[in-house]
Length: 250
Image (cartoon, rainbow, N blue to C red; front, top):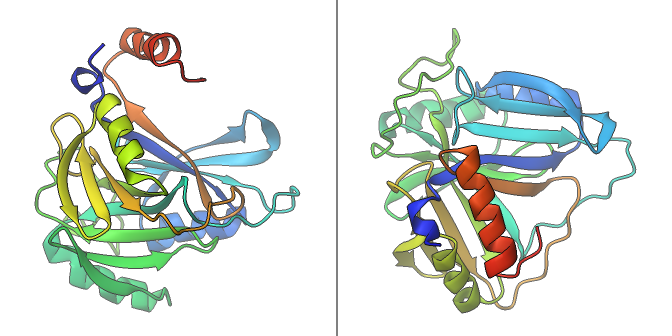
């Protein structure tokens, strides 16, 4: 099975976070995302599951969280074997707006350039590393979520990409090719892979860090990244292929 023909890109990102109210306030009031769904963690009904995204929560726009405060979950350590940074996409012309907005909300950030794009890197209240990336290559036409402070030209369009850190970049690169992602660019320790049509929402970035410490799951770490296919039938075929042909546990 050629996964490059069926894996279209990112579907959603889910993280384990600390306090529910702080999480809700940050993602809806500071970042201006919509709370599109509020339910519970199916593995622990004492824990909320918040879904944030655009107006109707379309694939590649959704970021979800499990607020595990006071549930006996340790503080996580961000490192190898994890997604270490989640990027949100905005138009290039909106970067100055987001600089001012982050300052207004007392969110410390650093400005850098990755693959030719300006990024504002910061952390959420639980310590998750996030960034806002300015790009005019985002072709998604889904309706963004706006409010009286964030208009259509400033709002987050969705997830731009995720960055994961690994010890063995060669082995992981081979896996990315098998999993349907193609190498698109490289700079320093970062390699960009794209699926489907490529671009924002269809991009993962691998950071090769052979001397880095292994990450520890817990509060303030990404729980998982989901990738998207077109149909449930295709999903079942992919599951069978990964389990039966590649011999990987699902």
